Image 1: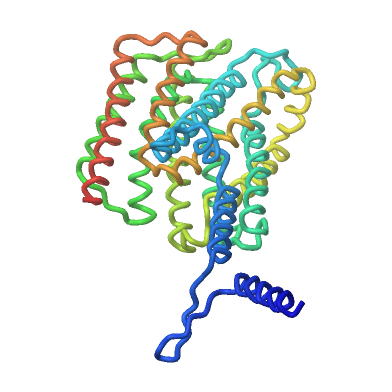
Image 2: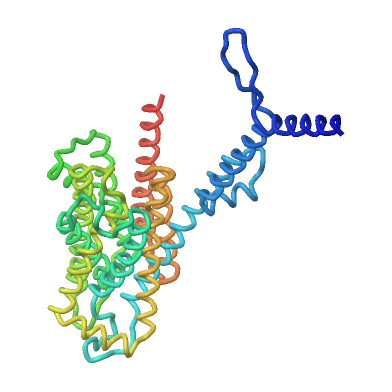
Amino acid sequence: NNNNNNNNKEEKVDSQSQMQPLVVKLDNNTDETVPNNNTQDATTTNDVQNSIKKEANLSFLERAAVQFGPRDNPEFFLVAVKFSFCFFGLQASYLTWGYMQELIMTTKFTPTEGAPGGIFPAAAFCVFANRFLAVIVAMIVVKRKHGSVFGNNRAPLWAFTPCAISNTTSSWCQYASLNYVSFPLQTIFKSSKIIPVMLMGKVLQNTSYPLVQYFEAFLITVGVAIFSLSSKEPKLDDGEDASSTASLGIILMLMYIFSDSFTSQWQSRIYNRYGKQNIDPYQMMLGVNSNAIIITTLGLVVTGDFLKVYEFLLVNPKAFVYNIITAITSATGQLFIYYTIKEFGPIPFTIIMTVRQIFSFCISSIVFQHHIGARALLGATMVFGVLFYQIYRKYNAKREQRN
């Protein structure tokens, strides 16, 4: 019995020693801890837990790439999936947005007392609808990222007012001009935005530009002029003069590009003043659209267009559906813009949007049967050629900086 008791005690001691790290006594009276198998198991468990946490933080696209992508080169597959997501997301959003925009402003709906011609009575309402949904989306994203809608924004709300006014003006001119010029002409004209951007940069921020950019701006201007003079399709009502109608459309487009150029330069000024680290794109989106909602609401009430639009939408519910689709694609487009620039930078984004302009040009010409002559096509080719050359030049400059 004594022998059995001694054996049991030795087994308990052995089992306890296995549960604890092994301590070896060294000659210099220091202790060195040698981990046993249990310690290695704990390390393995921690690695598994860390990998699980890392997987939980992956986005939907990253999980899809890990699950369905090739094992030998998952990084390339992930980049390809993300770029495809950005490309098709931007194309779907803005091609639909452009198509619905032209559909709203050119369709002959059922006439009402406020709109006897059957044309949508207020471009300002289209801007209001777009900004209304954009504010809701921005609030959700900012609340999720920062824990507060307005509390963590370093820039005060009034700082966004100037660019909100110019942004609202540019959007209104973009819609209203479709009553006087074709969508392809509008698309080509918007490509000449580089000229007022350079002017606004010089005035607001004293920015200097290389000679090659002035030459590119000159070529774009020539291309736009060729296209404009070769593809005049003024939209006439009874008793209207063709030249005055086309001139009004050109004036609205000039107002659009100058207002839009002011918007981007003022936003850059906000980033420089308050710090890019303190304002992210979604807070910018929230600040600009919050001001724009106030501006468009006041405009609709003061001009009396709100009642006209309300009456018009009751008679023409299809126009209301068109506005909803336009608002949704405008909001998703803004989100895709921020995501694309964040993941790939401005140059790939510019390529995608230039391709989108070409697609919009072609779709509008086919669906709405706009006649594009040989000289107009030459002007369009010149404009898009310069745009792609700009992208190529910026890419080379960035590559040289890295080297």
